[in-house]
Image 1 (cartoon, rainbow, N blue to C red):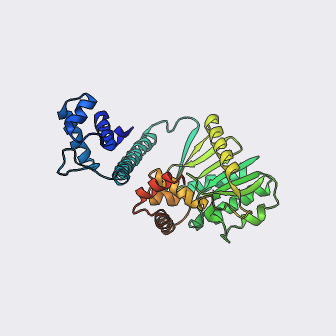
Image 2: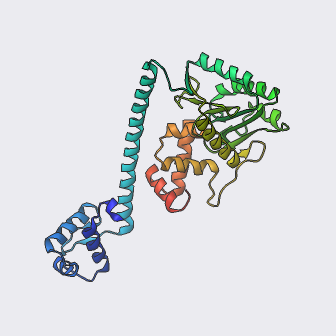
Image 3: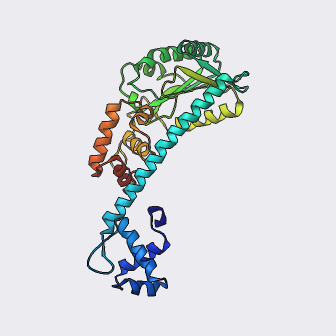
Length: 326
């Protein structure tokens, strides 16, 4: 298992013999393991390079406290994972750009069941068309939160239109909206059957589902109202509806007091932030998921690092996992 930290099988075996402390020379360990003494010397050199062994006047050197040395190796590995995740995100963005160019240049456009609506005006017009045509159900993910005040008025107007016609109307948004006095939907929905607003710590993307027949998704989550894809493939729509229902079941009604602290004294937002941070998301991506400002994300990260006694976000993720917080 320690091979992922840079210890091959022989180096690991030599390291365990150093722990046992039964032998004081390299040739004694070589005889015990049945390997050439040169291989043991190479393993000792490898342990020194990894910071697990400190050179000294003795043949075998001096063991570094494993509580410090192995922790340093873990943190180094976490840093490498972060770099690989960042590279993956860059590659994924490049692939998405190429796919978008292909879709735009292809004579036949997107595959049947997919339609791209580009431009804020065109997206707004399509949303109004759907609000007029919806007959049974209007479901939405709204991860914007109070920091995105621009979505409140137009979105509330659309929801009022479908609600006035008796269409079942449910919304899942982020906990950050709680206490926002601009959300007039709260009072309007309290006594309505098949309607409601519930909140969760974070949401991955905007989503609109209409009448179990079509879904609207943003082409770019960073600018959800600029370009959207309308999907009417039954299997894809049903999969997204199942995702909505799962989020709805786990969400907390807006009219309730909201989620409390867990056994570790963490709020739902703090726990979700740690989970997103451990997955390698940067502050901007976390901000979008939680529906809060960058300043709020950085403040919570600093507070959590202080509580965990961590000098960096990488160490905070390690400490949180070690303590069972995530």
